[in-house]
Length: 232
Ligand SMILES: Nc1ncnc2c1ncn2[C@@H]1O[C@H](COP(=O)(O)OP(=O)(O)OP(=O)(O)O)[C@@H](O)[C@H]1O
Ligand SMILES: [Mg+2]
Image (cartoon, rainbow, N blue to C red; front, top):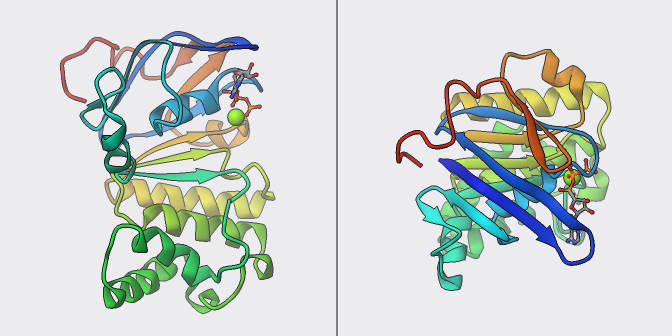
């Protein structure tokens, strides 16, 4: 699903954000990405979302390679992914329903299909009654669930979440984590960056820890060496 092969990312002023990072995530896996501030977590997620290009090495996502991909193919690959951010990033002047529908409209899906799908997604995240509300009328945890519903709109094979619980209290954190676990249990690969070591330690999921742009710990390194096979 995701393969990083000796990926280095250098930014013009700040220097090396990632240094020869290699790892492989199999389809269907749930993985935590941890490490201190500035370690390179968000940079990894941005490379996966094709928002940044590696300086050296190769990022492979669902069959596409950062080395060979053409600009015109980027939207097609992105549609296979759902992205969730710490600050939700909902459209403030649109209702909850409209926020989710928007992700579907850009793909040219018909009106009736959109309505049905939005209702189904709201039910999935437990917000069926909040469709007509504006984001500011919801709690942080509820807004994040809307963001997750939006990320799921195009039936992604992969969800990347960058500190999705970073702005939430403990109870809302557990709710969002449970939702991501359920999504993973239904077959979607999930990669979640988090500072929340308590959350990480409370589970058996694979954990990749970064420090200064390098992997310093991978709880599953022996199972998935970076050069194993060609299955991406
Ligand atoms: N667009 C950018 N331009 C220049 N430098 C950047 C850019 N994005 C990230 N960096 C640098 O790359 C390094 C890694 O940043 P990154 O955002 O990946 O860390 P992080 O692990 O997500 O940290 P945090 O936990 O604070 O979110 C930092 O030193 C940062 O300054
Ligand atoms: Mg970050």
